[in-house]
Image (cartoon, rainbow, N blue to C red; front, side, top):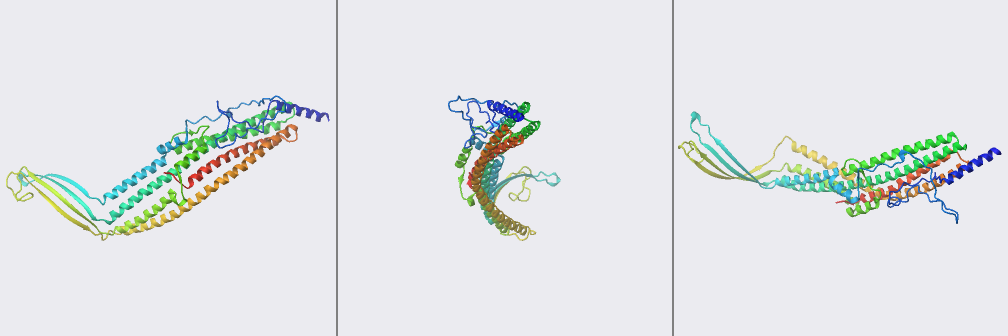
Length: 494
């Protein structure tokens, strides 16, 4: 009986010490607020995880200011900010248009297609060439030979060129395909940047939660050591608390690395070097608002990638027709106007270009010719038949790709719409689990102080609470990410 009474006295003394020092192990403290800023969560989020309500004081009693156990650890310092920080989503959009590698490549693909279209049009337009010639005849026996100067200008115009005429429409269609690909690439780039921003906000929140968890684990370790010094704890309790600190520290290190990688991913998506971060007050809801103004909702079968796949199928079919037109005849008319002059030496007689020697003279003349040429392809070794087989295979391949793109777009839109509901349900479950974990940790702490549970139960309840806080933070941002993905799943972003 005396031993039991001594134990109860020690437990009551320790509990009184913990209450006077305001130890709140089961409710981790929120991260420190910036100067002049009220601590709060991200836009659209709940209060920071781990922010516990102050205990109610008895009626008429003065309010006491709780004091925490002071713990110092270098890992509690926040991750340094990124070298560059986005001020708003509009700034991110401007950087995307200027620096995004995928978007720049897609823009230049449109320029290349327009250049090919202009070249195809040139095959059906008149062709005007000019030429000049200066020559000297080397006469035998050292005779003085004349010098000949000639110039000509030739105009050619196709009058039967079915393949060239058909190629103009094919080239125009290729420009349309490039523009649709640019539109779809812009949508993908916006999705990638928005996901990167949400990932940064998520990992920053997790980094804060991890630091709260490490601080809570360090406070628990300090309390366990005090219990050991008072004789109510054991070395095993201290070792378990140290293991909990090691686990919290490992989680913190992994979370900080995820934050750095998320910043680097945002920089890569924007076409910038190094890490790019977002400010503490960056509005995730503002991203959805801005995207809604930039992109127009449409049906799944009218999405840019689906329309581009249809146009590519039409392009492949036109390629097959172009291969057939290689068997068609080709005709052109040309007209040449020329002039020539002989000077110095013995000029030829009989007119310009005549034969004979009439002494030193300078003689000039001109000519004009018109001709029409009809070319009928007969045999080229079978190359045209090979082109036919190649283009037929290309048509079948593109038809299969079109079916795959249509199914993928439909599936993506359906899953994106469903993911919002699933994410909201997951957040509700995570919030309930977090509340239960908090209450379990609180009750376990009370039971531990009363001596009815072991330090293992206390450490385990603290670990589960930290994990529940992390899960809730992830679920909250998954809701935002799902809404953005659903918005862009069936959108046209021009």
